[in-house]
Structure formats: C-alpha cells, structure tokens
Amino acid sequence: MTTWSQLKSNQPIAIKMLQNSIEKQRTAHAYLFHGPKGTGKVEASLLFAMSYFCENREGTSEPCGECHSCKRIQTGNHPDVHWIKPDGQSIKKEQIEHLQKEFTYTGLESTQKCYIIEDAEKMTVHSANRLLKFLEEPSRQTVAILLSENIDSMLATILSRCQRIQFQPLSQTEQQQYLIEQGIPDSTARICVAMNLNIYEAKEWKDDEWFAEARKIVLQLMEKVMNSNNEGYLFIHQAWFDHFKDRNQLETGLELLLLWFKDIILYHLDEKEQLVFYDQSDRIERYHQMMTIDQAKHAVYNILDTKRRVSMNVHQTLAMEHLVLQI
Ligand SMILES: [Zn+2]
Image 1 (cartoon, rainbow, N blue to C red):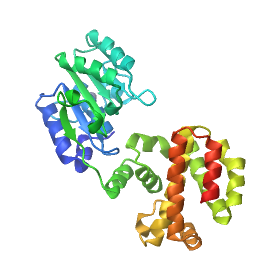
Image 2: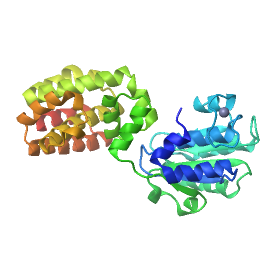
Image 3: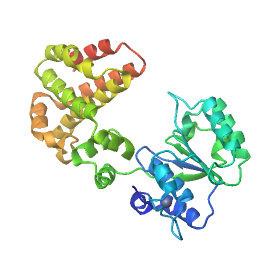
Image 4: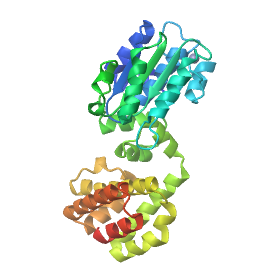
C-alpha cells in the first residue's frame, strides 16, 4: 500500500494540502486533482478515500490499511466509495445519473460518501451539466474528487466549484525510482515510465504473460526488419497478429516498437544511460551500426503515423504491412 509520506516525496505541496484538510477535518466538497499522467493522482484519490473512511485513524492522516473500510476501498468493494471511469471514449450522462441515484440513498454504512471521477475532462457536455447540478447542492458529507490531465477542456463552471490540487510533473528518474520502490523490476519500470503508465497499470503488467510475450514478439520483429523489410513483412503475417489481436493490443505493440527505435536514437546521441531496453544494450549497439540516426527518426515518424492511423480505425493488417515496408 502506498502511504501519504511516500507520495509526499514527489508531490510535497499537493500532499501537504490534502493531509492538512484530513487532519483538521476540513475537507472540501469537491477536489480537482490535475497534472500529467503518472504523477500520483489515482494513488492520492485512493488514499484520500481510505483516510476519509478509516476506522482506526487517530490524529494522523495516514489510514491504517487494515480495517474493514480500508481493505474494502483497496479492493474496490466499499459501498460508499464510487469510481467512475470513461465508458469507451467518454463519461456518459447515464453514468452520472447512476451515481446521483446511488447518492439519494443515505450512506449504506455511514453518513459519508465519496466519489472519484477519473479523466473528468472526458465528460460529455450532458454529463458535465448533470454533475454541475450535483455539485451545486452538495450533501454535507460528500466528497467528490475529479481527476484530470487536461483541465483546459473542462467547463469553467465545474472548475470554479472544485478546490484545485496541482500534481507536478515528475522527472523520468523520479518516476522510475518510485516504481522500483513499489516492487516493479527496473527493466519493467523503464518501459512503464516511457509508456506513461501509472503504478496500478505497471503492477498489472509486471507479471502479465501477454505483456511478456508482447515484448518478445516486438524484439523478434526488430530482428527481422533489421535483416530485411521482406522478413518483417512475412513475420507480421506469421506471428504478429496471432498476438496483437485488437486495437488496444496493437497500440501497445506499436508503442514498444517505438521505444526500440528511440533507443537506437539515444545510442547515436551517446545517451546510453537513458536506454529503455538497457538490458539489451548489445543488441541496440548492433542496430545502431546498421541504421543511421536519420533512418531511426524516420522509423519513429512512421510508427507514430501508424499509431494515428490505427486509432482512426484504418485496416490494421494494411497499416502494419505499410509500416514494415517503410522502416
Ligand atoms: Zn483503516
């Protein structure tokens, strides 16, 4: 379990403000945690909910992590704590209506309630207006936490009703250090930081067989395309699409491929300590001899273009065929 003091090392101002409001029992009706991905917003929301409901917390802001409330919040099973995440591309009006309905009943176990809205900027106009009504008539013991990476696309009327807590961007080294402290192996931590994953996503991927296999297949594709474009072409038909079956999976595959070419660029620039696949530096050295920095940049450009096309629902096989012939 993450603690407030751990989060505080990266976000001293934000966490101090939250700890103060918990310790003095002066919590706001609505908070807006904003800042880039991977800065601790999700972790802070979870901790906030635990501190708010913890049965053993005395004179400190740290929740015990052991009581019935803490345990159920950690596993997502507390009846008075609601998490809302985008359903597909947006947060829909029905999701906010459902939340409101839940809240018309008094707290199931206590009189307090807490709801957390992730990616709050993804609310449709209808859902934002719904939420606004809700924020305008707060029941006394309800705390709303809105999380956002992009507050510029949120309604000003919503922003004005929230206490804003800013989460500062972390350096790559700080992020990596944090993941390692949380038990993520260094080699995975580097990939997760490069892919902008938060601690929960990183933990999910740490022991994930699909992800381990994805890393292998991307590496195999690298070997093939370095030999010849034709080998790469054959390989995507033989092995690639057996593993990267849907759009999300394909996007992860492309993201990993991108990191390899970025590593080749880093090697050319003599920034070897920054390599994501630092445990494969022999291989990257070999690749950098086979490819100029301009060729590697060209590959990065093509992969980004393929990612964009895939996100726009271009035929996936065609997009990949095109890519391996371009690299
Ligand atoms: Zn507790």
